Image (cartoon, rainbow, N blue to C red; front, side, top):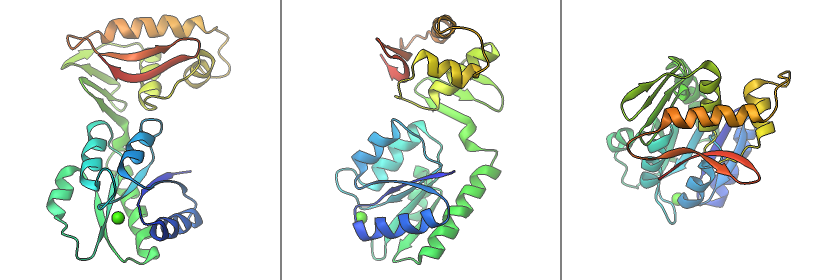
Length: 226
Ligand code: CA
């Protein structure tokens, strides 16, 4: 099931959009301001974001720019008629499309589907993850840290991809084993520790950033820390 994050401060619009998207079989998460949207994106990555331009706390431009630092998830901007909206600026910031309010829900749904389709055709943009100093390309099975290509074993790659596609989320060793090695794997949780250790060594960088954080008593999470 594909998940859409709807970022919109006007409740009636948020509700209307959610109802129509759910009716089309999408899972919908909502945020009523820009700060909340960014906070949510630290723990999950939706398949598409509908992003209102005029938002409390952080406006749509800023949110869009922040999202693009880490994620390639498609973004459709929602703008109100009469609002000054610079389409070129929006596209430069990384928005994929925009819809002017008031819009018909059917048109909105059609646009969402079109952008999702385009994103998939574009060679699944979500197969590349970018973090400060780190690039992970799943199609090419390539990892680059600070401009240097790094050689990982297939399991190390899967492990890094899994953690990096769920930034800030804490996973126990057992959960990681299940997700990366599969239920059938007879090994124990020390396997995870060994692989994390090797990954950290390989990802060591001059910026002394640490990408995999140990959460004592719980497990590991991906996050960029100094
Ligand atoms: Ca608004």
